[in-house]
Image 1: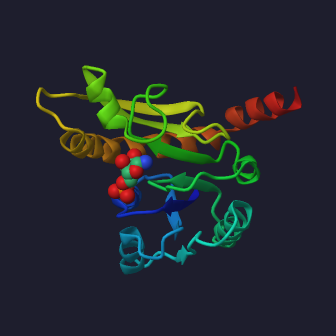
Image 2 (image 1 turned 90 degrees about the horizontal axis):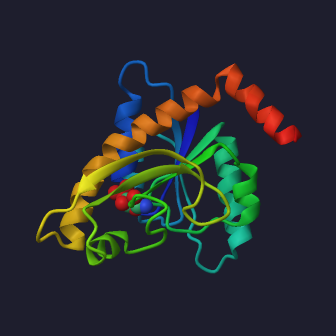
Length: 202
Ligand code: GRF
């Protein structure tokens, strides 16, 4: 499977996805890294690794026009899946609809707990025993699609949002490549395709 990764920042999840893809038997390859921030650190990683990049600031553009430009870049890369990895723009409904069942995201909480921002502060504040991360399909409702995998991380006494975020990030780097690999293998399985066609026909 060919995957486009969308980022806005330093790109540590992108790096985890990329290096996992270079190990034997990984069922996906990364064909594009695209960002809404031309300064995103992850773009430099992609360039150095010989992966095509695309950057277009969203500033001064309306959401649909920006989504459309990202979509055009993704399509011309030949990607058949999109992985959001710290992409900090909310995608419009039309963009999400075009990639239904083929766009995934990683979110740093145990969804359905704490969609949105400040997940670690909220977990600590609530006195939770664990934080964690979830990989899920993207739907038009923020952080609310079908979960594809999750990983729990114990909250330590004295954890701050930053110390917890740092440990959850290690867990994200383990989870994301595995969940993406499992999903692309599963969704190209003929049984799965047939089930989806039946679902759509209903
Ligand atoms: C990660 O914590 C991810 O879960 C969140 O944004 C962060 C991105 O970090 N959505 P990085 O750019 O992958 O290092």
